Image 1 (spheres, rainbow, N blue to C red):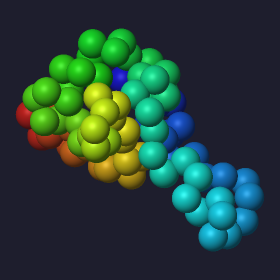
Image 2 (image 1 turned 120 degrees about the vertical axis):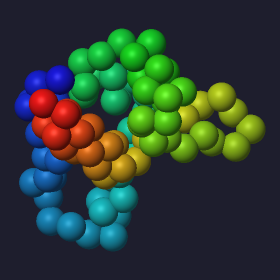
Image 3 (image 1 turned 120 degrees about the horizontal axis):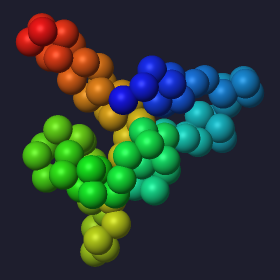
Length: 86
């Protein structure tokens, strides 16, 4: 995974933080996440099944969403684990 992918997850908005825009961009769809990380849907599914990628299953639907900060934390944990193993 490139550094660009990690950066895009943490890119702050240029707008000032207000109650209305504070909630924007907190959650990502599977399509948005695979686009940001530049991986396939199958890779996202495998990471979900393994428990490596945190997700929220919406009630009554097969749809899932991802909390952006939780995904960032999971990526950073994986990066630390990889560095320790090397």
